[in-house]
Amino acid sequence: MQPFFTEQQEMLRQTARDFARRELAPKAAEVDEREEFPRAQFKGMAALGFTGMALDEEFGGSGGGYRDQMVVIEEVAAACGSSSTVLITHVSLGGSAISRHGSPEQKRRWVPDIADGKKIAAFALTEPGTGSDALGLETTARPDGENYILNGTKLFCTNGAAADIFVVFVTHGRGLGHKGISAIVVERGTPGFTVNPQHGKMGMKGCATAELVFQDSRVPRANRLGGEGQGYRIALNILDSSRISIAAQCVGLARGALDAALDYSRKRKAFGGPIAGHQAVQFMLADMAMDVDAARLMTWRAASLYDAHMPHTAEAAMAKVFASEAAHRVAHKALQVHGGVGYFRPSAVERIYRDQRVTEIYEGTSEIQRLVIARSLIGKLEG
Ligand SMILES: Cc1cc2nc3c(=O)[nH]c(=O)nc-3n(C[C@H](O)[C@H](O)[C@H](O)COP(=O)(O)OP(=O)(O)OC[C@H]3O[C@@H](n4cnc5c(N)ncnc54)[C@H](O)[C@@H]3O)c2cc1C
Image (tube, rainbow, N blue to C red):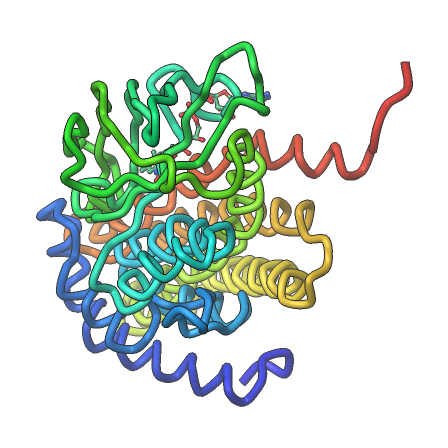
């Protein structure tokens, strides 16, 4: 029990932990091996209300704040990295974009099915020519009567291969900069819209990554979230808070690695006793525990600020970059504690070592997070 979580949140943690240990952990190696969207796991998370977390309660979401979400995501990630990426993308990216920025009519149309997991959501910002620099996106939306005609390609879209509802960022003209970007909801099956699964990832293999291709794809203007040209603001708003979810994911990945290392170090014997008796191993375990705790505290602070409707941009970036790099260190040490066996599949630490790496890249690389933090420290420079 942590004093900074409520009794209700601890109960939520217990529910999530029981589910994750029973339903997710035993199949995590298989999800990794098969490189397919984990449908049964997604259904299980939906049955517990996790797919509706932080989504508008009026439209079927389970409400709750980011501290609730961080509790659940930590437990899911500790058991199965891919399932946590699938959940975060569904709830914190695609689902939240519609829940927070959709009109009542748009929410009525899409949020209930997203919240109860009947439909899977995705978020498509990155393109072949641009990732960190979102202003460089080239997928166009040309007005045509009551519709937009979409042309372009999106890359690395998590959940893409399985998703039903895509929040797609487009430009109405490159020269317009951020004022030309809109967020448009595109449904699977829209003519001219093709989904091509992308394989060959190093880790997080179950998160159903896809390339999205739009060729004269006709989408109703009524599918645009917010006003025309408000898409960049929407993207920043969503990424700002979703980074808290990624930080929570990193806490979970790191804790999963620490748990595995602790367990192994008690059982594995060398030089007359368990390796946990050797001080060099103890120091690794101690360093790992400190990293997990510090990452959890920073994530909790960012989540608390979000829940209190207070500014949280720098704190969310700090939590994301620290937690992802902490998870990197912890995964490295956990594998070291396992010796040779940790280097082979299907050891959990081998999988976590690979799964962790992308947390330093997606939803803003560590370098971009540091830019965000530095900007908040320095403020506007004169001249
Ligand atoms: C498994 C996976 C899942 C993903 N899921 C999604 C998704 O669901 N939706 C989506 O839209 N995107 C998704 N992405 C894309 C991801 O968000 C981008 O890869 C990420 O934002 C980085 O963009 P990039 O790959 O184009 O790298 P680039 O932007 O080309 O960056 C390359 C390098 O240059 C550095 N760099 C760039 N600009 C600066 C700067 N100004 N200062 C210092 N360094 C800089 C970067 O930090 C990085 O090290 C996913 C990616 C992966 C790998």
